[in-house]
Length: 110
Length: 114
Image (tube, rainbow over all chains, first blue to last red; front, side, top):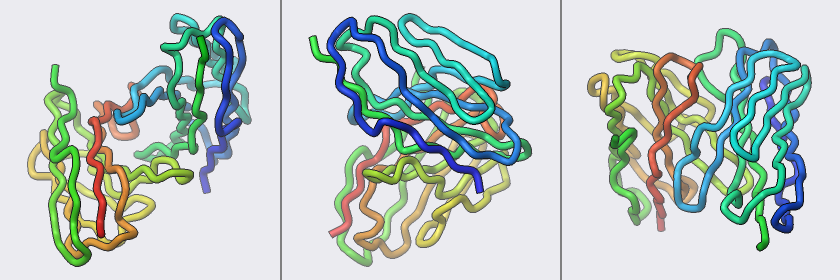
């Protein structure tokens, strides 16, 4: 069974304090790993797709990396507007759906 | 650019009542999905439609039915609501089955069953 575990559940940082969020996954064969951002009261918003170990993608202060067992979302010099819940999801080869982790709630204090 | 539109945004039902959650997308996407989101449980797939005319069960289909009315619309029906169905429901769509380019989500329907 495909599984996704995210850690930590919640993270508080000061503005400018860099850190990383973890997504560990178990999947029979990885077709893709996805990162989403979710603001309170809204639907998740797509950030990145990673397909193979060693791949990296960046968007503003966010960088996602992928290994064979986990993915990291690195946040460099975060700002209060980066506060949100970050969701990780995997898609197995041959599957037509994504399996989501429980998310990491990130709070950036000014 | 409406994207994925869900109605209603909020709903309170009494146990045993029925209702239909509506979802429409204007991006000409082939695949559509219904998820529920509960605290500590993450997003769980209820039903999905890989293409117009097909529907399949997800992880938690019991108590729900779906209809892919046309390429744009995918509705979720609760025939006899139960308190356990209190949740936030999200509809999503993707260009290809499985979402190679990511899902586009609606803003959600917050449902309370009393």
